[in-house]
Amino acid sequence: MRPAGLKAFEERDLKKAGLYSYEQRKGSKLEPKYEEQMQANSKAWEFFQSQPPWYQQAASWWVISAKKEETRLKRLATLIEDSEHGRSIAPLTRRERTE
Image 1 (tube, helix red, strand yellow):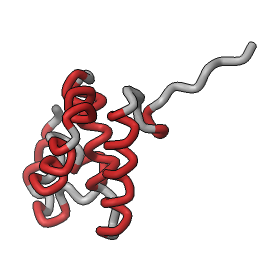
Image 2: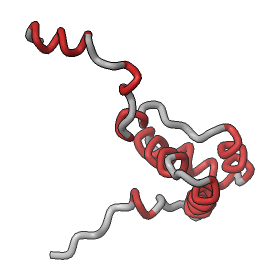
Image 3: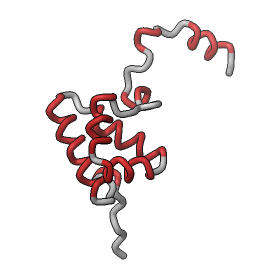
Image 4: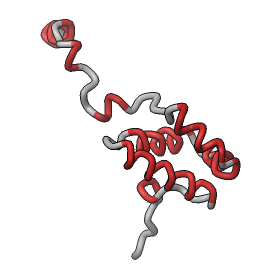
């Protein structure tokens, strides 16, 4: 990095760091209360645990990123139901290509 870039980095306002959603996603996991609900359904939990880390992280973020508690609970219910039936949640499901 060049001196001007280093200077700007050193003088950044740490209070403004991590404000954007993509900065908050790292290490996103289900909160313990949601994880307990997920584990209560052994079939859903087994499927969820068998998925690759990128899916677990993205699905967890989908649940916990909702602003309202009611929306988080609704998304968690969807995640549990879809996992119980061995399918990924709709936002993370690839669409089939039509040619």
